[in-house]
Image (cartoon, rainbow, N blue to C red; front, top):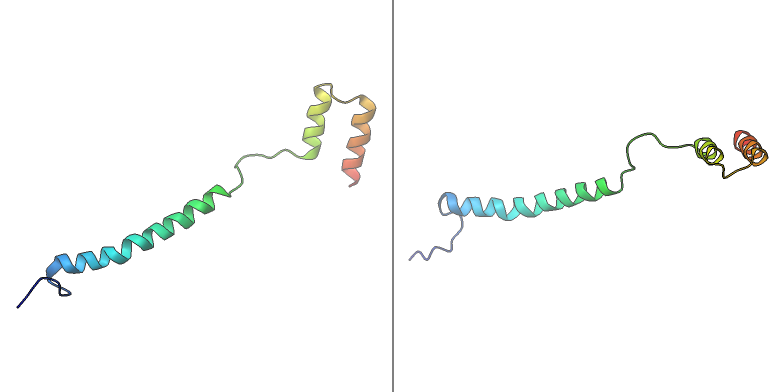
Length: 77
């Protein structure tokens, strides 16, 4: 007597078995890719220390002497 709980009864049983494995695997792959994207550095040009120093001097936050000394320190080091 058949009660419908056997394995491989037509296309429906096989399809559910594939989905049972495919969906969790796809979710794991998606989670790994999504977490990798969050840690990626922003794209575009990055400022160097000299760029930042130039901006600070241009804004008037450094005197000429401070600017020249810091610029020389950065170039040496």
